Image (cartoon, rainbow, N blue to C red; front, side, top):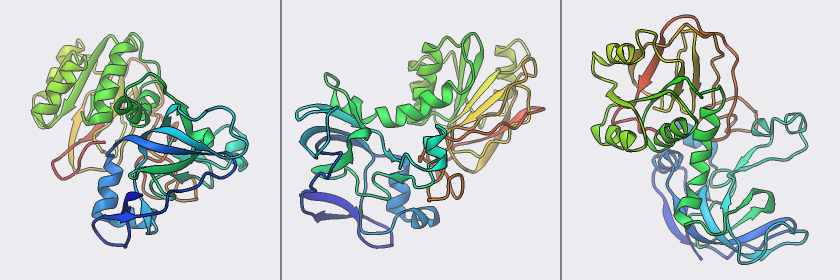
Length: 319
């Protein structure tokens, strides 16, 4: 079969020929129907320091996937040949202390499809049945996007959003999903910021009441005006920033560090926790090392004045 792989520890990828994988006990074989390209895949292609710590070539990339079940290993009972499935990209052992207490996203032996094990930028891929999400009846392109959208869903609902003002910083694909989720989740007002007008227009189409350029010096005042001087109550940081919550609302990050900083007002009327939905361990030590798209983690730090957030730049793409 054809596959797109990182074959050497250097920039670039290679189209290679590989044997069709065989499903073992508890595994399913998928014939790929759709895959989307994540910011993580870009980093692995460019082979920056973070990527070199994650992937040990040769590895087939691809973790945002939709495929049709065409083979099953012994013990598979939940899905059947012919099913269209999405793919949960995190493989956990289910036996470590973190998994046993319910924090499977912090699994000490976490493996990510398309990084630690072969992924789905190929004609076929094998995954554990536990990672197959039945998606019959959906467009395969939509099925593949369930994986990144799950990040936005998790981030949006770490804190209550119904009836609250929500700011989404960064309108990349996951940020745009978060805008729509906040609107559907009953936010009283949804504000989005980015540095590209194209993305701001997409945010408006996703339901943002206000979409503002993060580089505009008047943006903070516009947010205050839109919130009757109170500032926003919930911040969903999606720009690729390392947020520094300094306020009395709630902040949630689903990204990692970028470059150009902007400070936006956050309400002090409700004291909440600064929760992070950025990634957990990309290595075998949960919670350590660079964090990008390898599972949600939480923090319970208490903020105390305006939130400083970093907005996306051309050199640091939004997640």
